Amino acid sequence: QVQLVESGGGLVQPGGSLRLSCAASGFRFRSYAMSWVRQAPGKGLEWVSTINSGGTSTYYADSVKGRFTISRDNAKNMLFLQMNSLKPNDTAVYYCKKDAVRGKGTLVTVSS
Picture 1 (cartoon, rainbow, N blue to C red):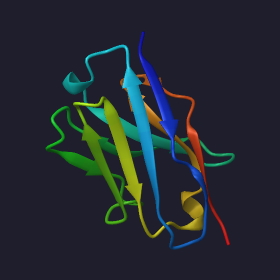
Picture 2: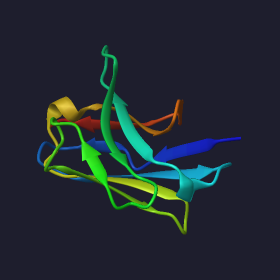
Picture 3: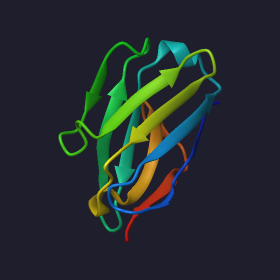
């Protein structure tokens, strides 16, 4: 049974940084591409970033390119999202995603 547990969210001021983590279990983590998606209050799900199974290729939405970095540790079954230069419109619940499955999410609030 696939399990994805996000952590690391919180309240941060504009311009600040956060690092999100996702602990994965129940599947062969190293064999799958993984993604981060987010949902802002009152809006639909938005794709943020994807990393291939080996961690050698990464992809970003234009809205986060140059500010966010996705990475993974296949030895520890962990996915990460380093978020820098955060903006108020980055406020959202962030989800770790494998195929159609996502975790319960972690809330990121960017506000002064």
